[in-house]
Structures are given as structure tokens and as C-alpha cells.
Length: 377
Ligand code: NAD
Image (tube, rainbow, N blue to C red):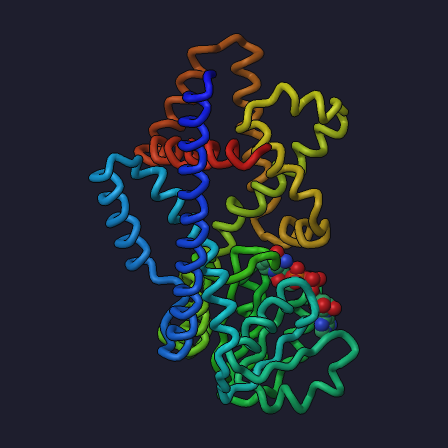
């Protein structure tokens, strides 16, 4: 490179640095604005997450990008990442808005993983929150008598005995739980309490920063319509609340949680027995396999009690897992019989069962994979 070329090269690089600095400034300005919006939304009782606004904003900027000759996917990726940050920012600034809500909330098991998240959320929103833990039942009777909501968040295996201790709550108090199974706790809550009852199942773990876009399944027990203050509060935090029958919830969880967790644990168990050198496996793995392995590995970094409880407490656990093993065997028999046509026919049946979702999932996972690749160093 001669000195003239070098000078031009440096000049262009300086230009890029300058644009990056401007980008940082713009993002900082955007975050300041979203902080303001968070405060305003808190005052106006508007939800943290507004799906319509988000879709309009992204579509609008995609069009703008296209006109400007920039990839709409790049702009969408960028905006979604910035928006994720802005939800964290909004929920922080929302929490600083001084609000007082005249409702007393008791979280049973409120020092546990999920319970403490809800304690924090309710406190930040201005509710008067108290916690009732093991060994605190005698002292906790007064707060139970004054409660507007009692939220049960204890391990599945003690949920029954805890709910049975909750008879005698005020008639207008809401009794709710966060248990990963719904039919049995809901039935028990309806037996012990005459007032409003609802079963909730947050489809997320305790490690999240805010509830925007998080799913919560709600099973109405008694006197809880979809505009009840508790459900409205969950929506204000940004959650998607899906009302569903408790029996249907447990059946769906047989697939969504029990089978998935069981097969993940079985895969990890198998890997351990086969004992390959993990680093060697990773060194020859595609990003998708690394991601799949990460999904297996992350489960073993968590609480074995929670996963065992989820698997062991589902009423359809054993029949569901046996049906799965039977289908594994059907495929294995095709392999043993070198029945490649049968194998392909089974593949085609599954493709047609997924229908148009198969292509959508392919596109969606491609986007996730390229992001995963970008974030790996
Ligand atoms: P955890 O073990 O972290 O917390 C449970 C809390 O309950 C503990 O603080 C414990 O001291 C307390 N507790 C136990 N027995 C008690 C009793 N007799 N009286 C009062 N308190 C008692 O469990 P977790 O992971 O927070 O799960 C709680 C509930 O949330 C479970 O029903 C679980 O199915 C459900 N859930 C958890 C997750 C998750 O990812 N952790 C996700 C969805 C639903």
C-alpha cells in the first residue's frame, strides 16, 4: 500500500469509527427515551409490552431500510436487540415510579427462586408484599387474614399440604399458585377457599429481568374473569396470559415439559455413559449441534428437584414416555430391516403433520443459528 492509499484507507476507517460513535450516541438517546416511556406507561397503567406498536415499528423500519438499500433483516435484527434492552430499561424506570396500591399480597415460598421474582415484581409495582416461609406459619396468620392475594410458590411435592393450610382466608381474597402442574392444585384450592381462585403457570424460569413477551398459562378456578386485576397486572408487566382449562394444561405439559425434559435427561444420561471427550465432540460440531448440546447441558446446571418433580407429578408421564419409546422402537426396526422406504415414508408423514410450520420453523431457526454464530467468539 503506498502512502496515498494508506491515507485514504485511514480516512475511511476513521469514517467508520465516527459512524460507530454516532451509533452508540443514538442508542444511548433511544434508551433515555425508552426510560421516559417506562415512567409514563407506569403512570398511565399501560403494559410494558405493546405487540401492535412493536410490529408497526419493525415493519415501518424494514420498509425504510429497503428504500435506503439496507437489508431489512439487518435492521429488524438490530431493532429487536435494541428493543430487548429497552424492555429492561423500561421495567427499571417503571420500578422507580412511586406507586402505592392498596392490596396486600402474601407469597408462600416467597424466598424461593420463582417466588422471590414475583415478590420483587409486586413490590416494584407498589403492592404491600409479605412472605410466608417454612416455620413462619404462626407469625404469618395475621397477613393471611388481611390478604388480597395469596400466591403459593412452593416445591410441587409440598404444594398439596401447603394449600390445605390455607383455609379461612377472607372471602374476597384471591388464592393462586405458580405450580408447574395445574389440575390437582386447582381442585385443592377450590376445596379450601370459597373466594376467587386461579392457577398460574409461568412458562419461564426465575432468571429473567422482566416479563415482556413471557408466557403465563392461567387456569380459572372461580370468579376470575379475563379482566381481573391480577391478570391485568400480569399483562401490565408485559406477559402474554393464555387462559386454558387445567386438564388441558396438564395434558399439553406432558409434551411441552415432561417428554422434553425426560428425553433431554435421557440424552445426557446416555452421553455420560458413552463418555466421549466433550471438547472433541464440540470441535467437530456444527453450530446447530452445539446449540442442541447447550440445551441439554443447561438443564444439568439447574435444580434436579424441579425437573424430577415436573416429570414425576404429571398424571400422563409414564404412558406418554412409553408411547415415545414405542415410536423410537418402530424407527429402530426400520433401520434394522434396512427399510429405507418405510423410514422415508415416516419422515414424509411428519413433514405433512408440521405442514407450513415446517418451513416457518426452518426460517426461524436459521435466524437463531446465525445469531448464535455471531455471538460466539
Ligand atoms: P424453590 O425450591 O426455589 O422455592 C420454594 C420455596 O418454598 C422455598 O423458599 C422453600 O423454603 C419454600 N417452602 C417449602 N415448603 C414450605 C412450606 N411448607 N411453607 C412455606 N414455604 C415453604 O422452588 P421454585 O423453583 O421457586 O418453584 C416454586 C414453584 O414454582 C413450584 O411449584 C414450581 O413448579 C413452580 N415453577 C418453577 C419454575 C422455575 O423455573 N423455578 C418455573 C415455573 C413454575
